[in-house]
Image (tube, rainbow, N blue to C red):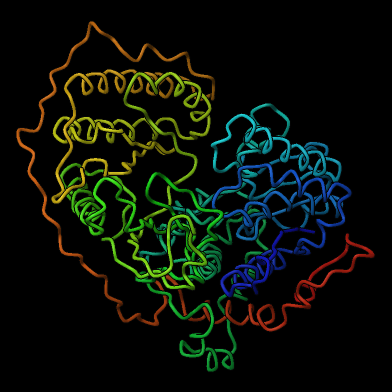
Length: 601
C-alpha cells in the first residue's frame, strides 16, 4: 500500500486541480502495481493525542496559510493510525518503483526514512516510528515559537530538517526522489527527451512535482497535465531501460491512449467550467474577497500587508491603505506616488544591474467594498476607503536576511549557521552568489539610497533578492530620493565584506560535507577604508500616472508540450472525484487500516 494525505479546507469543496492531481497520483501508483490509499482528517481523529496535538498546533508559527500547514503536520498522525508504511505526497509519483518495494520489509529495519533529504515527498517507517516522529515534529514546532516569538513559519519540513540534523530520522543516500526541473524545461520547450534524461533518472524511485519545480515552466492549472505528460514521455524514451518497467508501460498506455468516445466528448469548451478553463501562461490571479487569505493569517510591516491568493500559491499582493501617510495626511495620493516611483525604480535596477526583486506589476487603486473589508484587516482597511494593491512573487523558503550595519550583524551569525546547511549544491551556490554579490556592490556604489534600512534576501541557490525598494523615497508634495551619510555607507560595506568572506569560506572549504561554519570574522575593520562615490544630485520625482492593468482575452489552449490526449485522459480520470466527493472521502472508523477512498478501490 502507498498512502497520501489530502483534506479540502474547512467549508470548501475539492479544487478541480487538486482532484486532477489526485487522479494522476492514484493512476500512476496503481499502474506500478501499488494499492493507493488517500488518508484524511478522519484518520487523524483516531489518534489518542489528537486533542493535545490541536492545542499545540495553536502555539506554533504556521505562516500565512495556517490551515494548509496545520494539515501538513497532521498527515504524520494519519500515518501512525493506519500502522505506518509508505507515504508519498500527492504530487509525487513512481518512476522506477514497483510494488515489490511495498511487499518487502521496510528499509532501515522500519526506522523513519526520508527519500528527498528533509523534504516530505516520500517517507517510510513502522507505525511506532511514524508515531514517534509525528510527536517530535510538534515538539519542534512549539520550540521554534519559544525560541523566536517573531518567527512567522515553521512547517513540518523545517521540523524534519531539525530532526535530520540531530540524527533522529534518516535521509536515504543517494536521494530516491527528484524534482524534475530539467525534464519539465525540456518538455515545456516542445523538445523530446534524450539519452541524458534516461541517464539522469536511472535508479531514482520517484518524481516530485513540487509547486516550485513545476511552477517554473507551467501555470498552476496545468500542473496535473505536466505530471501525466512527463510520465508518458519518459516512458516512451526511457521505459525499455528502466530497471522496473512494468508500471511505466501501463502509465504510458493509460495516459496516452484515449478512446474515440472520450476524444469526441472532452473538448476545450466543456472544460471551461473545470480546471481547464485557463491553461495559458497569461493566467493571472485576481484580488478578490474569495481569492485572498484570511486577514488573521497575513504578515504586515509598518505600512503594507502581504495577502496570498488561494488560486496561485506562489503569488500574492502587497496592500497599502491610502491613509497610512501620517507625515503628510493632506495628500492621500502620496503613497501611490511612492509606489509608482518604486515600480519604475525596480524596473530600472533590474535592467541596469540585473537584480532580482519580487514586484510583478505597477500598483493599482481599489475601493474597499463592504465584502472586501470583511476579508481585510479591520485596523488598516476601512469600508469605503481606498487602498493600493501590487502583485508580487512570494519569497522562496528558506531565505537569509542579510544586514548592512554592525548592530544587526552579530545576531546574524547564528542565523547564518542555521541557514547554510540547507544549501545542497555548494559549488553552484557559490557561483550564483558571487555574480549577484558583485552586481549588488556595484549597484550600492551608485544607488546609495538603498543602504538606508538595507533589505536583502539570500536563498539556498545563491540568489539575492532586493526588497522594500520604496525605502529610497521620502514622501512630500513631491517624491524625493533619500540621502545616506558617508560614514553609514562605509560601515555598510565593511559589514558586507565580513558576510561575503564568511559565506564563501564555508562554501569553498574544500569538502562536500555539511558542517558548522567557523565563527564569522569581525564585521567592522576600522583599518580598512573604501572610497564610496555618492550620487551627485538628487532629482525630485513627480507623481507618475497610474498605469492600470487591462484584462486580456485568454486563449483556451494547452501549454507547450502537453498533448490533447493526455489532457483528455486526466480530465476523465478526475471526473469521479469531482462528481462524488462524499463517497471519495468516506471513512470506516471500525477499521482504519484497510480504508481506501471509494474512487480508489
